[in-house]
Image (cartoon, rainbow over all chains, first blue to last red; front, side):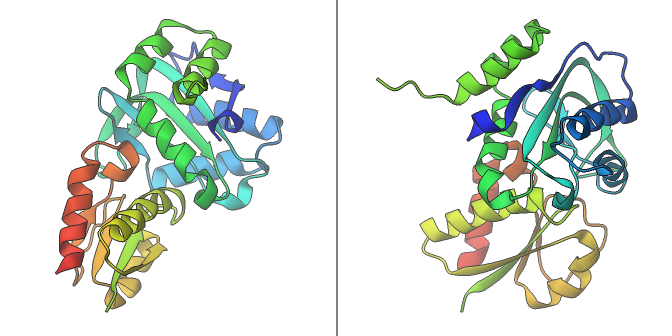
Length: 157
Length: 93
């Protein structure tokens, strides 16, 4: 369930001047502080990002999905940073190239088999023009969390 | 005989699992029997020896004796149907 993976405390805005490493540290340390992941997660994500980068070409802009080994995960979640100016990430399909990434989706997922659907839906949804237009308009993390969750909530009549 | 597909990603976990799941579902819909395996780029050299096809979400620097299909579309959703068709056509052969 997507609601269980999206948390307003794990949505980051107003980060325009951040470097890739600072950004990963900021997101990772918050995940560590809130006990979603074990100590060492952040260093591991940074190391993995160097070896196997996660920058991706989206439909409308670049994004990245930094992550690491599932052994670091305590409680599965997804942290999201919104950076309208973009931060350079090396590309997953060609590490010699970089892509300016506007949405960073840090994955703290420990059971790919059950959390995959949610993950793929989020990645695809983040490229939905209507959704990102709305997301880029605000800095309010609660609003952003709600926008993302609502995107997946089919009204029941 | 069922075809064997090796799904590769950088951490051997998340993105390959996303791709693997969609390949399995598409094969099922197409009535094709397949076996899938996941690994990291470091293991491809050895594991590629027993498979018919490699689908990788990450760049593979070496050449292998089996075809390699770029599986990035499974993560971004862009061009996914085209890649799935390509994989299914190959598996039907």
